[in-house]
Image (cartoon, protein in one colour):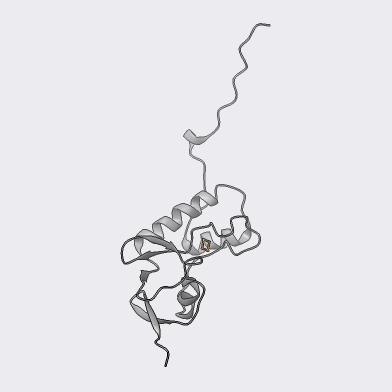
Length: 131
Ligand code: FES
């Protein structure tokens, strides 16, 4: 008989059955975790950081690229994680973005980025030189 290994996700014990990453287990529980780097419209594959989860030790892991480990204990939606996701999304929205990213921004309540006056580019000065 095979010993089943478990990890804890948001306080719920979950059996590990060969899933490649924590994200797969999170989804089996019906927990919605924002992700978008698997979307082909985006060039940030594997690097969006939206799927961050927090371990019991207080470290951050990327759910989409971290294999589940027996005894691992994670939280998927702490206030700190929500704040991190909002900041990352705000920065990504500072550039022209595909619809999927705008949908995520609406889901997480991140407003469109507006440039602050101190961030605006100043006109280039004329080069100084001998004429
Ligand atoms: S979904 Fe993009 S880093 Fe995990």
